[in-house]
Amino acid sequence: MAHRDGIVKAKTRRSKRFLQSREPKLIEGQKNTMIIKGGNTSETVSQALKDVYALKKPNAVLYKRKNMVRPFDDSTALEFFSKKSDCSLFLFGSHNKKRPNNLIFGRLFDFHLLDMFELGIESFVSLRNLKTDTCPEGTKPLLVFAGELFETDREHQRLRNLLTDFFCGPRVSAVRLAGLEHVLHFTALEGRIYMRSYKVLLKKSGCRTPRIQLQDMGPSFDFVLRRSHMASDDLYRTAHKQPRGVKPKKKKNISHDAFGTRLGRLHMQKQNLDKLQTRKMKGLRKRRGEQKAETPAAKAPRTELQTPETVLQDPPAAADA
Image (cartoon, rainbow, N blue to C red; front, side):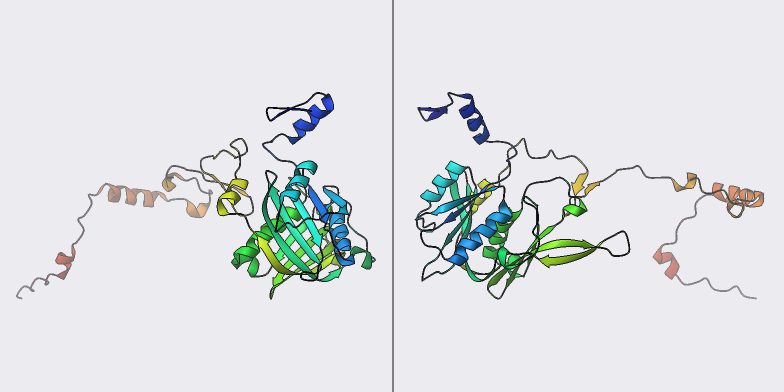
């Protein structure tokens, strides 16, 4: 590839395919995650990074060498790694006396830092400590968020959005029942964030619907929120902006509910119930005498309605005998 006037031109077919893969797309592909070790890490942090990498494979890149990076002080190194490995999500692990067992979850937009959250590990159960079967690689997890803070606090709302973006997995149009194998549960309670990972077991229930049982698979974390860096509202809206080609065209009288169900509205003329064809029963048939009696009554002129003044007048005096 040759650089001239700020334009990168490909010289070989391989470099041409590489540049085409990096071009902007209307529908973006699966987001990749880079997992980076800091200059000083503990055994807990190193194992935590490996476990998260096992959950994120194959859409993740693990940096095994230590990197002297301080994301909250200078993010240029993360932006360089992001552009080099084509990753928009990152997990950075570090350990020091002031902030022991530290994990930083973050994401980038257009290879520039968008937002990140620093979580301290208070308790950790690794995958290797639980002798249970794990889910296959690339399984799309079910995400469950519990806790009032995820609904009321702005910082926790943005953290929920980041965790959803981090662990959501591939975009799919439909999921079969047997494919629901992994559940990630996040709970915000009393200043702590509890992350639990379960494997879904389908047991026999004696009927067509199986009985669901959750088995602790790991890893499990007890986090405490330490620091955060959130993008401005303008930059956040720009990151969520969709091109015109992706936005669905609005159709008249068609809407969708919260679950994505398509709802349509029909406009009809006023229906004449007198001509409605009902079920032919002997009890509903009109007799000949009733039809003749209704005929003159229908032709009779309409009587004037009595006004309130007419009703309240005194009755006429009785005639003398």
